[in-house]
Length: 190
Image (cartoon, rainbow, N blue to C red; front, side, top):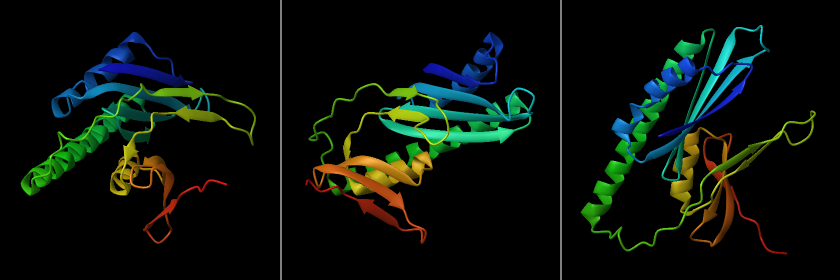
């Protein structure tokens, strides 16, 4: 598994890299398809503050799983984030296993579907003054159903999710409403 470190006010030493790599290596047990992970380390309030934020994002064959933890000491926060991500991976794998078993029981032919080529995720950060774009994310968009988009949005713990709706053959924005239901915005051509 390839690890990418991003840091803000936290020095990334070789021992920290080794520790994080050792903690995240156990993910391969649960999900061998994990091919890359992004480790974001941040110290809130600047260099003198004592509150660390660790965000782990894993790309598992096009599905992104994320865990974020905060605390006063860096290594225990990394441990907590790794444990949280392990739970996410376990839940995701169980859900995929149950859905595959369910589809096989109904006689659905999964092999008949054409695989969509995926490009590598590309993230780019850009920081400027307040009131402007401070971060730009680029990611491959694969066709999926509304149910798959809801599942992906929940796995990422986001309130919205942009995806290519395979049924409508267009882009759609899925969002969580205040009442707990979901809404969808579908653009129309002018």
